[in-house]
Image 1: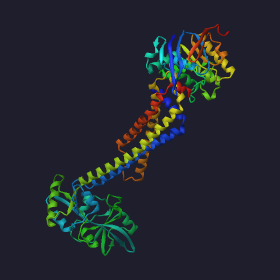
Image 2: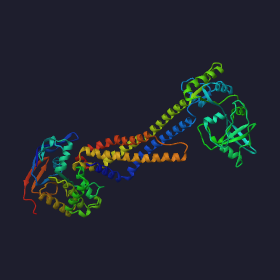
Image 3: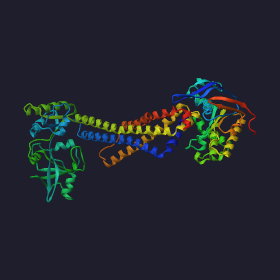
Image 4: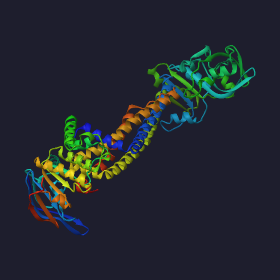
Length: 402
Length: 229
């Protein structure tokens, strides 16, 4: 029996029950498509977040108030924001004097009402300094970022995001205008170019003021974060231990803050998203097993429906192996076709997601696409064997009598 | 060509054992025309199945074209059946989703022959049973007599040495039945051995050698002049 004939025969018998065959194809393709789509979501999210952190530069240290004692829980501390003694501007100034430290950017974040003439809107207010933009690298639509000053100096200036500029000023050029933030007034020195959502905030809705002004606006001496750049990549470890020493000394010998490196965050996110992606793939994989059981069920029905045909094939000289091959070929063609169809649907869904959310690169990893197809084919094979063997073992005399 | 000695075939039915074949001896020579007759349950179909290698005897020896059947495994039996034996059945047993031509091709396909050779040979055999113009009809577009002719073409396509027919006219009206008989008798005159199992005395009496079976035994085995041709 030639392979081409086997394929033709199984195609013929699948076409004989178009509804049943297409339902099975649908079941399998949904399984494969969901493996591909879900992993593309997981992978897309992972790459997006990795990319956001990679943008911050590789020799970055992030210092945050509060201490979690569990090893490796730095990220948790960062997200929950456990509090101990606050980090202050004086801490930043002390860190800045370390020989291993390059740029330093203390940050304060809060919300506030911003107004110009009669217009007012709520915005996220960030207290930062000129160095912050050297780390963050925002583009300017007009004007400049905050001027270089000492970090503890008050200066009535601000930089606004594109949406804020549009909504407050319409067509008036904002640079040089005075706006009111809470109780204070400041002059707009620059407008950020449109950049959309980043990991922490929507750039377009920001107002950036000098960090000392932000502390005044929110009436707090504490800092949200201190971003510290090591003088060079080689000095990361030195810088890390040095700033821990400096701030611990300043806090009466208690290490009540956390310093995390960008690498640590990246690998934490990587492993979290790796697990999430694998879990999504496994959940989707279950639907493939279900599809496999469906294949088995349908093939068992096919064997009993075609009992007399199997008897006939035996009378015409078909060996057991040939009968086995014919029925397995049907199961596998179904699962292969379904798998390819599902692959197409899954890739189309990832493409649709990419089109809808261009900032995230939704793309299923190769292993997921291969695993989806592979599991589909293997389940066709595994669940096809039982019915095929049953067909091959039929007694021809009894089968013909049916 | 065929040599059966002491063939027994028992079936358990409930807690009893039915002796469908009880020590049957039979020789068949090439080109013979044999009818096997007997009441229901006399074992004639079982005998045909054993001869056709669809059923294995519990006891006895069976030699077909120089092969001791007892020594062959399932695949070897299938191969021998493919080369030596053509079957036709009362209910035709055509594959309903295939055309007449594809049905006739089926044994050659199972034998692994290439498409082109199959097409030509199958078309040729269909021409010979008078179905040339209806090659691409499916069984449900054919009359009973035409279906049985497709089945005969399928049985002949591998050029077997014996044709086994189990009530070949049982589902046909008398005119179609007569046509079918004419075709298989014509094949017999060309050297094909013909074994026909039937209830129909008129059909059975046409054979040159007539075997009667009762209770799993051959009760009569006589040569006659056969039907006038």
